[in-house]
Amino acid sequence: MWKYKLDGTPVRPDIGPMMEAVKTIHAAVLEGRPEIGCKMHTHTPSDIAVASQKCGLLPISQHAVIFHNRVGYHDFKGFELEKGMRNALLEDFGDKSVVIMRNHGALVIAPAIAEAFLKHHNSPAGRR
Image (cartoon, rainbow, N blue to C red):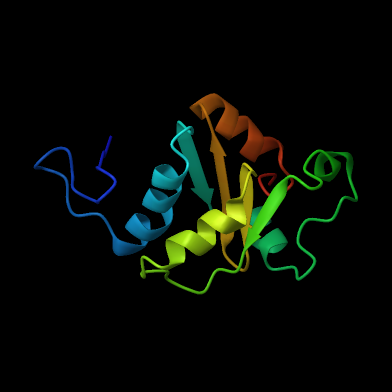
């Protein structure tokens, strides 16, 4: 498994450098929300379909209603390589545990891996 410090430094010498976008998006969430133990970022066809809709996730099914008013939205602006984008992402997360990145995918955070997986799998954005 690859492991890095939040600044992108690998914990082992045999691991390559971390991509800049990973440092901006993923490290920002982990650093800004220290209570979380797991973060999932996916680009499933369902993620992208929901993220591409101007209206976002509509509460029109029993699966979607579970997430009503519990999803944040982030206007993804391409490869977010500037550190200044971190604050915008964290503000869009707010107190939510699911953020739909418009025209991109989904981010799910939780205290543990199992909870993050279940949140993602059971959300309409995670269904395939």
